[in-house]
Image (tube, rainbow, N blue to C red; front, side, top):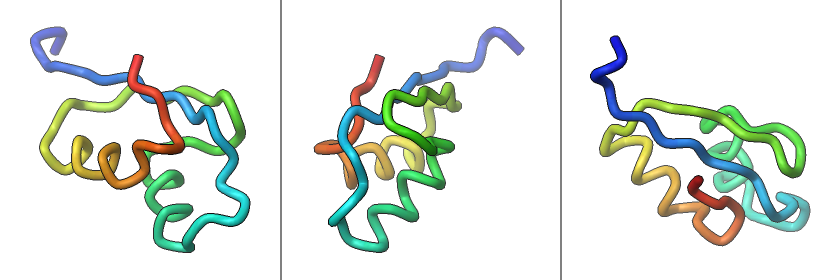
Length: 60
């Protein structure tokens, strides 16, 4: 199982005042509060979600 690639994302900007679809994307990434982190499998779908909200998150 350790052969799977993972990516860790951190919410570094507030979702207040952003589009509803961007808020939903942040929740889909498993991020709730500011500075929360989530480790996800590195797939094209996850990479696309990160790209959509790149101005809100930081990839660690």
